[in-house]
Image (cartoon, rainbow, N blue to C red):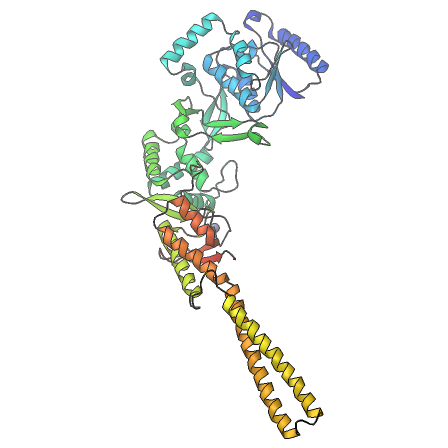
Amino acid sequence: MEAAQYLRKSRMEEGMDTQEVLSRHRQALGEYAKGHDIHIIETYYEVVSGESLYARPEMLRLLEDVEAGKYEAVLVIDLDRLSRGRMRDQGIILDAFRESGTKIITPEKTFDLNDEVDDELAEFKTFMSRREYKIINKRLRRGLNQSIQNGCYVANAPYGYRKIYVDKKPTLEIYEPEAQYVRMIFDLYLHGYGCVSIARELTLLGSRPHRSDKWNRSSIAHILRNPTFTGKVVWNQKSHIKKGSKGNPKHITIYNPREKWTITDGLHPAIIDQATYDKAQEIMAGRYQPAKNDGTVKSPLAGLVRCSQCGIHMQRYYAAEQQGKIPYLMCRTVGCCAAAKYTYVEAAVLDRLRQKLEELTVHPPKSLTPDLAPLEAELAAAQKERAAAEGQKSRLYELLELGEYDLPTFRERMAAVKDKISKLELRITTVKTRIQALQSTEPDIQAQKIIAVLDAYETSDAAHRNSLLKSVIDMIWYTKAKKTKPMDFQLEIQFKPN
Ligand SMILES: [Zn+2]
């Protein structure tokens, strides 16, 4: 098992020599690890003793690594080394361990916050003194924990900032080479630019976001939504799904919806003033609809339309116009196909269905389940007649040999029989073709399906429309050049084979 150890003095040990105390703990943990097949791959050495989480830089570093799922377990000499402190801090610490599935190992007991949550948490609480408990309750009633306002918990510096330590407390300072682009993003956005064009602009200027080589719609939107740029601190922005839970092969981080965030004043300087930020949020509230996936299909074209340039699925998004919201169909690739109004594309698809139906029904209409019996009877009769005629033909040869017929009579009769046979053969071929045509009902079924789609479409909801379209269409390839008229898009429809 790969683990880290966290070393820190307890309240009881205050006044004693730090180095001496910690090296004693280190030795004890080392022995325990050796006896339990635990490999200590990292040591967090807390030499400052502060109550607040922000006064414990090594704890912050440990939390980042625990959240990232770096270790299977963390060794401490006693649980109170982790749990001591304020309630809010404890919540943060426990959450990090619980959500990343990291175990807490003390020589006395191993704590797995996931497997026996209630049991172990109860035990955890016994480590808090009665006094601490009272303070916590008072604080909870007051609402906000002061510790958030007094410090700044920074995991990774966001774009535009650098992480620094002031009096051993981590905070942020403005990093001008990036901050200038943050200002530019807000400025362009307030001047009516969309996220995609801002992304293109920044990429052209040579700017890069932290975790990608290119700006895109979502990374720009992420900057525009982040309150950190106004000097705020955001809590609870992310949730973690631990490795192994819910069938996930690795640790997953999810961004929580805004309602779940806790935003308070931080200690770091603002890059964007509050008024500018608020204005950007207003614009975004009208323009941007986050993709909420609750399992219901809201777009009739969902999963059907792909960009012919880059191949990705086109997405529906909302743009604000004078009144209400207008949905657009867009390609998420920066600089790719131009977007088109959703309703235009949907209408064009229906037009193409009507067109296809027309092509199919140029042929005479046929009943869905053709009655083949009369044709089959006719075929059988014609085949029987031909067999009889063949019989007549050989009989003519016989009669010629027997001297019953002279040659001219023979030739005359033979010509008549041959004519009869060729006429019968023509009839047989015709009947066979008609039977085959009726049996291959392929165009019929496709036409019937399209009729069904067009009939039901108007009165159906988005999800049903989607399944109607998917019953006849495999894929729609979408193309639209930049700076073309709103209706100037091309659709190449692949129909489902029957
Ligand atoms: Zn594309």
